[in-house]
Image (cartoon, rainbow, N blue to C red; front, side):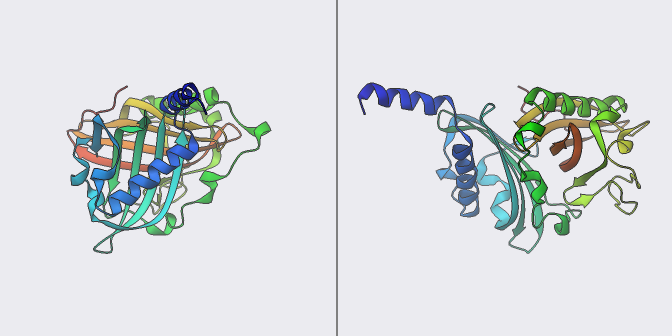
Amino acid sequence: MTGLAFIFVDLAYAATCDRVCLLAEAKQFNANMLAHTPAKIPLAASANVRENTKAIALADSKWNGVTKILSEGVYTDPILGNVIEHVAAETSGGKVVYIGTRLKVADQKIKEVEVNFDDGPRVSVKNLVPYDPIFNTIVPSEERSTREELVRIITDYFKGLTDHNPNQADYDPRCDRYHSGNRVTHNPKNGTEQSGDDGCYESNLGPKPWGPATEVRIGLVDPERAIVIGYAILYYRNSNRRMQINEVFKILGGRLWMVDNIGLMEEGVTTSGFTE
């Protein structure tokens, strides 16, 4: 290979990190966090690293208490340069936690690390281990929604969290939403959102204590697997409480089919720290 050819290869790698590359980045990240060697993770010099919206050093992440990964769903978007995973894990004390991690990769470096770490009492292992295989099923090419269609559905979903007038045509009646493993739809005993036997559509219809949804971001779109991952800061009426939500959406036949949410409620959160 000539020197000029090497230059073109290097430029191509710098411009994009494909699915295989992004999966390798996530695998390397997990391995180093489990081994307590975050210094080996190839962070860019000015990397924005945040956990539950707070700026941190990776060495101070709650990942340090994790000893074992129990299950994981990993998604990639080479166009946006993001690899995002939802991981059920176990801590040294035997506690099950649920972790969402987004890595933004460019020029062979990780420019952003966004961690949503749920170590609360409502993490439910029974619906997290194993990770539901429906999220990684590949949709036949003739049945796929376009990238633009998928983005529109989820943009309207977050709009519905603000005006509580969701578009019914975007929801399959069987759609279920899980909050860190708790099924909060079609489940009168869920105890998390008190949505009764409502589905994804009905649970956000009419007056609700939440909204508006701000800082809405589409972090990943994978038409092959019919996956979109979205982020937002959700306000609550007459309260300083804010919830950062990180949701994986499975969309089949142009309708929301399943939602895997990590939502973390904290006082006084005003920004995720990722607004572009």
